[in-house]
Figure (cartoon, rainbow, N blue to C red):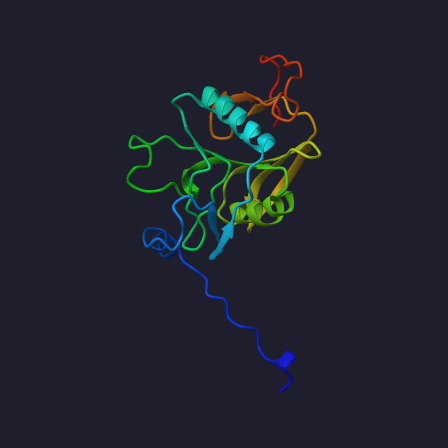
Length: 204
């Protein structure tokens, strides 16, 4: 048999529990920036200053907008089934009295997932957004810092988002799952730009 005709080697996919055991056993460094995607350990890209600034700004804006009605997590694990545990840049979660001390948040706890992309746009759109759709996360925002552009993914069905919008200059935007919840995204993609009216209509 020609070597090119031989079957490809079988990859060993990890479960979320095995992934955690690797961390506890020291196989993964305590400060390792990795996440588990469909059973594979993926190294997260280094964070530059633009990415850091956008995440910090969004954290402040979202936290102020939701108050005590939700919990905003920043680069914290979100358990999706048995083989995925991504760490989205931000996640707006349903409130829980113990602040998820008893168990990590899962798909049903997430109201909104936010990814910030300066060098990982293809991965965030083609891989991670589809992962979120398969687990029925109701809404995903991907901030493209290079274009710049906000991509909004909504209405998950059969493992895909059935509605996608591209917003070059986002302004006051409704927060999913929170009645009258609005966050002004005017300065996320264009820091220093004049703020739009906070009382203006929200984008949906």
